[in-house]
Length: 624
Image 1 (spheres, rainbow, N blue to C red):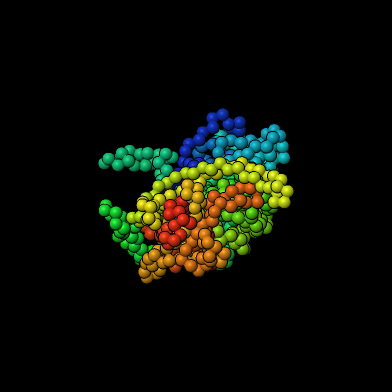
Image 2 (image 1 turned 90 degrees about the vertical axis):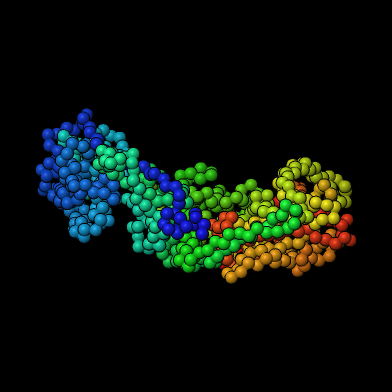
């Protein structure tokens, strides 16, 4: 099977890992110029204030210090605060925090529970270096768990919490006694795990989480038998899905995102829809159209790709969940129009201005009616931006905002996007009557509109048009050229299929052609199925109806209301055409094939050009 897909299925979802920054707590930090130099250590000062700090002291001496989440040391936080490294501790008084709750977590012996105490209580109330309360300004401090807190010197508060006894000097830093602990604020990555109603999206995202070794932050030991040893091995949490597919570093405290989070029931209901688009078959075998050296039409037998039942389930689950999740995150402060999206009011304002929003994975959400030829790539139209975010203000987290939604309002084009394929890019081969080549044509056009009664000129317009084509040129004056085009990443759903044909200005003629499609069912390959004209208004050059016939004809150039000229005609060659199986992610391994073939009778040779200019192939997915 495909190697890239196999790596997904075996849990190593991506080939690249991204090293994220963090504070390595094992580094030595000594502050020899501390403004608060006492004779006792911080720990000794905490013990000396046991009437106020005995509960917090008990926690400190019960938890072993962890350089990273996956590693503990033999020293407790009491030992750490009794040593030489410099810290500032903001110690909450007895009765101000859930002492029994945290003791209960420690008594479980479960690593995650113990680390929760360390991260949310201990590390959330201490910082590196010495920080004294002095002056009248406000200072942003980095807490020991990488969260941020504002110290208001004039009000004598830290993150809004009153400092009851400030500036107790110690020889290894400063101790402040506070009225309560600072509230722990999770980041988006942590917030996913903080609510049971977000278990589904959390399980999907965290399934890609890995623990990576940080060689740069680790302390190297002696080399033994040619192998490097490590005195202090530092690791960090990495997630290839969020960093490489969502392109959002949800665990970084210095980032600022907003993210839409579907509840479990919403996730379940949406997954039922998206799974329909990713029905894979047990085996694919893609034959390739080509010609022999002598010029005869032939095919090259492809290599069969086979999936086990377990792999098929994994593929469907992976892609259907990714379709929901990939475009849920946004940069909170910056969009195309420099607008913030940190409140529902911001989003409604963007909606009113007909701005666009862009996900971190580069999907553009445009107001309905604003898509055009220059902004249609990776873009979907949305009636109401606020509906996407649940129409309610978000929950603030330490690195952004979480919009929890009970209804998934994304348009189906997000997870079943339209396919606008450049004909030159997806061209596979031609038949032996065709000599294809790529060309770019530019027209300079002057259009004059006159009043049919008075003859007065109403409007004039000069325009320049540029089109790229795959030119299906005929080899001889009597041949009818044909060409094959790949349709990659097609989903298992219904599509309206269009081809964009350029009017042949060289011959001043239209084209008449047939269309055939080859695709897979669950048990076989359907080859060269003829498509019938679905357009009730379709006519040939003699105005005879083509509806339900085997032919398609492009129109002559037409003039729009704004005086622009259409030298191309977008022709619907199939409506509600259903592909029984999905090809998503299979790249060149498997795909449907569309064949276009010039075809008309000898009596029609003065009406049509044999040479066909194919501009694009468009597949518009229909919601299941």
